[in-house]
Image 1 (cartoon, protein in one colour):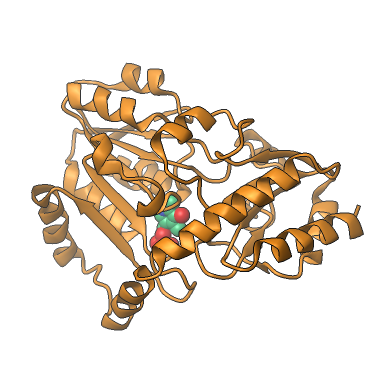
Image 2: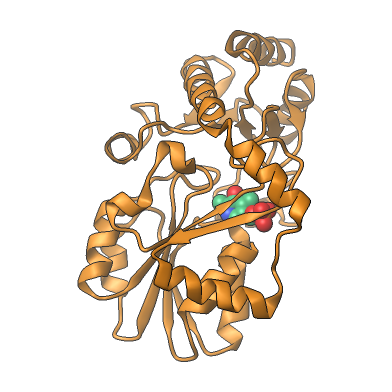
Amino acid sequence: MAAVTSTILALVKSGAHVILFADCYRRTRQFVTTFLDRFGVSNTLIPPADVEALAAAIRPETRLVIAEAPTNPYQTVPDLEQVAEICREKKVKTLIDSTFATPVNFKPASYGIDIVVHSATKYLAGHNDVLGGVVAGKAGLVSLVRDLRSVFGACLDPHAAYLIHRGIKTLALRVEQQNASAQALAERLEHHPRVRQVWYPGLPSHPNHDTAKRLMSGFGGVVTFEVDGDLQDTSRFVDACQIPRIAPSLGGVESLIEQPALMSYFELSTEEREAIGIKNNLVRYAVGIEDTGELIADLLRALESTG
Ligand SMILES: *Cc1c(COP(=O)(O)O)cnc(C)c1O
């Protein structure tokens, strides 16, 4: 989050306007809509992947557009090529949080995105044992972030830096395995009688599949699905899975599973969650690098034993 907040702060000042897709990482949204708002930076939230809404929301004082792909938990992939084009024309900077895609699956700079941030906590470090972030882009922009970072003190400690550096050496291998497993899981879950719906950009049924196919060389390691059942049924299923650990986060070598209604969004009521599309029976599965067949067998066993 220090990478995200330092980058945004380096690029805006009082009076500026920021546009962000409503389904971006919730702490980023919180930072822009509450913190920045207090310092006279206004914002507009636009619907997920809605590039027309983006064009309409740009004002003379708009400085920055913040996007993500794929987003959490519904894996929306906005057409970032169009986003970059619209913003370049209007001289608005583009920031993408590319944590979910990783540099293996998506290369934002080649689509004209100005600045890229990653939570290195996830895939880059890759072992669920470190917190850190990355900012990448043209030297002129990154040096603004570096200066600000020195003032705010968001510095990585040497051991965390070492772990991230070491993790990156196996990034490509891990992500390829995670892409393959997630695709296989998504395909297997999609037609399972105990699963109502699956969201994975690698499935032709995903609303942004065509965009994802054009922009990305892999579809990532996160599969989101709705179990056929209520809050308790879904919890029973999650508990019955034996390989993934029950935890938020993603991107490590071990698979993680979570029920967003009870974890990431636990403080909201069922009604408040429904309003932002987080159903009680929603599950997010972030695959690790375990054997694909074993992951699928474990999932099927858990679905069948709790059905
Ligand atoms: C986890 C995450 C963050 C925040 O990262 P931390 O390393 O936990 O500070 C930001 N953006 C996205 C998309 C994330 O998944």
